[in-house]
Length: 353
Ligand code: TYM
Image (cartoon, rainbow, N blue to C red; front, side, top):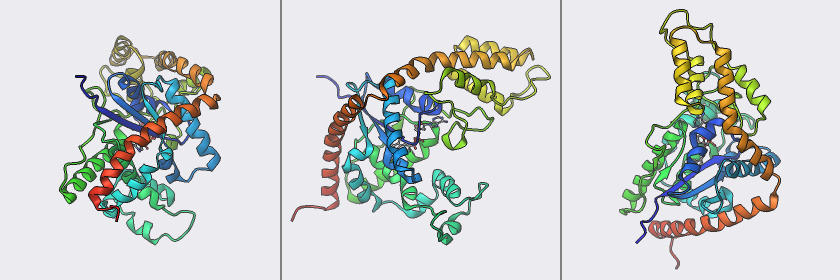
């Protein structure tokens, strides 16, 4: 008998085009897993709503992410590809699971604190923002409840499929930890052994954080430091050539500064090991020229991005094809989700009279 494939679930928010953090941190693994796992990938448009996007922009972003999923190599026949909001079972289970989630634990989540601070226009990274959140009565700087319950919705995305693996970047690991905690809590509250504990997946390596080119920690849209899959060659090269560096090593084997280490990290993702070794050696013996290193990095990134960019251009305006893909995906995803929701309602005591 054929062994049942392990279930894989992951999603990306529709907040614009995908960047290389999304690609190396998540999407590349989505593609690599599609042959050996039962893979279900979605576009997290409900999660995107937590930052109140313009409706037209949201719709455009959903289409862009979908086109970029396929362009990066996801085959709609091998994967269940769907839009989160096309599966209303998710929203219902989100309501149900919220009954077992504490406000305190949600408020302590790092991503919530970050976003709440931004919404309130607070700078710095002070820990004490609870008072600011509760005291804030303005309609502009409010912290919406969807932002708070973001991890519940993410847990439902995963648990509704009874996923085994969730390929995500390092920044999502806390959310995954909460997912496991909610699963355990549900099981123990109802005395069932219903949900498993899904884990991250990166082919045996630790989860990664793709750095930005501005010397800062992470490539991210709100950091404004992204290289996009849809960037044209000139833009890509320009951004790489402008990357922050330092004055160069002054003595052999000097420690590497953060901005330069970021360049090495990108190079490790995009270039051949011998190329990385060459520049590491050049750094160590002080012969390195950052201009050369950047040119090499830009060329190696271009090799990865060029075919994806071309496919994006080929399919992004093909509405008929794109809507067919997500219609088929939604049908499959709803069937999986409906099974779980039926069980969860039954376990919680929501039964027909
Ligand atoms: P999102 O949309 O912020 O990012 C999508 C994926 O890209 C990864 N990523 C990165 N990885 C490495 N380095 C970076 N600089 C970088 N930037 C982004 C993220 O780790 C993520 O894997 N909450 C999720 C979306 C989501 C989800 C889910 C994911 C909703 N429900 C269920 C998995 C399962 C998010 O906001 O990711």
